[in-house]
Image (cartoon, rainbow, N blue to C red; front, top):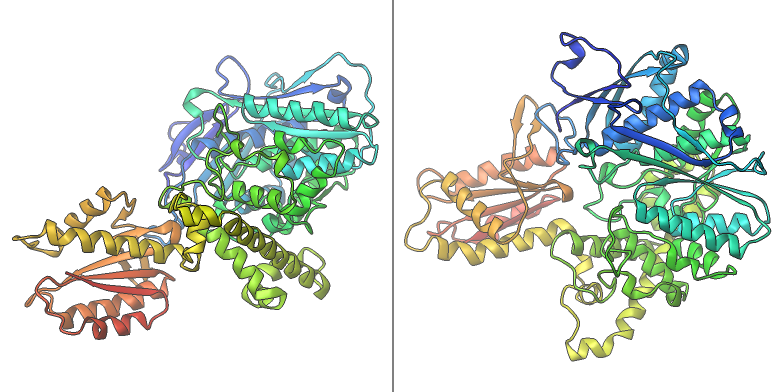
Length: 624
């Protein structure tokens, strides 16, 4: 776990002896004054907007800005467990925040609801202490234009507009009704803001009968606070709070996210996408929690919904492709890497969101609006770096093939926990559960059909041998997607050590198992394997245990044993492994056991590893 943090916000005073400082890294955050380090500005609003904003909403925006700043500034730990059995991926935040509506925020049920919502979004722990804010301490959040007209009262919803394909389709669908449209954006970078502005100009031209208001919120951090953590799972909280403030001022019926249901349901698309790294922004439970919390803050029956939940990504692309201006697609951005951009490309082409977008575009026959050169790596035929980039592609495909082949009934059985959790907030009935399983099955079929067509399309390149061995369709054609990330990594580790150990140990075998571990560590690092050494700890009863190496992103631990005649006979090693299987297996770990046996003390390699392999999640190889 990263060091617990204490954030003293808005000029709050805390004595050096205060126990809340104990054991925590202390940071000060301020949104106003000469020493402000969190600059949050909401732009392009009519002056009448300010008349609708009360102290509690300003408090809410302050809280959201402080939380987002803390999220960006605090790197996560590893995705394991520490000596106390706590998830090291998670972080521990304590905030001291001055507020105007002190009685409201100090209500225990309010702060509890806030902490639970943020905890679900980010998989972190939050605690808030609220103190009174002096009347003079008020950030100038809102910047107004000079337009006296305000035709945006009582919209059905305030739309969250990121500039991605899903939110773009939502704006298109709303504008097509002829109603006035209120869009709220988080302006994370100048280039993204420009894209949002360009999209808005094209939308206004395509739908002249629909008046559009765009409210961008910009949050800039000083250099000392600038982003160190890429996941930024509280960004949607900042986004939603800004939309809620606009909804309150315009007397809207609610706020509206747009996200296809496959993303919303939050099935992990890859072994690497675990915990808070898989977005929970539009999961039905999250929307329920947003609605409950915002109703309390705004004291109105605001609705938080996602009308695209029953759509696949292909459906989303088709909505824009069938609009008066299908070229809007080319201005949208879907890349998971929020700051990725080059002179020629808007998408990295390697993340799961780029893969999802490109597959949907091809399935919808909309490639002319989404040029391949807009991806730094061509999704289907471009070379992928070994490790994360290849695993993301292969595990995305494996999930899609699984959803396609299982069918709705198989999905219901295999993903029962995920289906039941979502269905609880979808109506809790058989029809919604069946519909959800059908949606996931349809997504799997779409992705599988696109991949099959891409392999056929590039058959001549297969024959000519001019496709990179690491490109997606070659990996799929070689059935690499049938092997999960832990098995692929285990195979790479075995190959590295099997090739390297004989030469490294020629004439002078390691003296001890510790020496062997150090030697192997060097070989693995030289081969580019980024493994954690002797990390993390896991609890088994009263015993703490740890592996020689781990790759927690894919839940693989590695143990190496050194067979020697006296101190570590094959029988003794077998006993040690049996004990490890119990300890590690009870912690839900997949383990690769490597047995280095240069003297051939093990007479029957297959017989030695067979009982290890009989245990689920356990792998074993004898090395010489």
